[in-house]
Length: 278
Ligand code: CUA
Image (cartoon, rainbow, N blue to C red; front, side, top):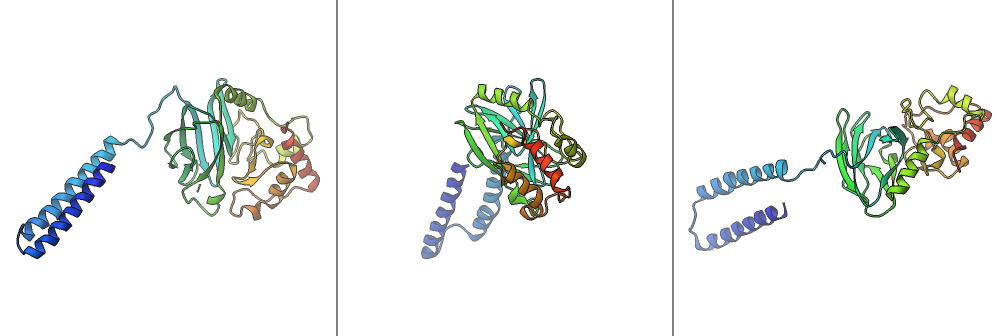
């Protein structure tokens, strides 16, 4: 592509120099030949070559490769759902934060629940669209273990900016242990908040890492995450309370309905969701 650009630039500069010299000397190639050659043939040949090159030479979409680690990322207005298709023989569901291997390539399968979003982790790879009704495969690699910030990069509605996510790249052994731990983590069902959650929240949210759940993000192991609702900081019960009470102001336009339960019930639900905190 660079070589093509340099060739075109050289051609244009050469033609410009020729035109300058010609106007001084007053003769040379006829205007008709210049028009047909420079105005029709040249763009036709160049654009055709570029089209062939872009179709054949440069593959933007990755090839499917079952030997690579696979993460499914599904865009929703306005959060990212992350699914690991096979952890111990079954899918594992999560949201907002993804865990991937460090030091080896992986595939991200991009999908969308509603409108076009774009998956972008600037330090790991370029952007790729998540489009409803199709799966776009993206290949990326985190060279070193670490935490990488991601952001939806396609305007998708009024809370497009609050559609952030986090990618944690871990060494392979650590990753396997983390995913197994996540698959075994759910809030303590013995807490009184379990019944309140079932009554008020479970229509939209699952707390079972093995069950995808309704339209809202899966909340299994929620207390192990570091952000809520695509970007609000989360370090403890106070942040969770603030989010549950104030999310219509923090994230206006979010699909999450306002919290209407009384304070005692809210306290029990928060204690329940926070029970996964080590
Ligand atoms: Cu999703 Cu912008």
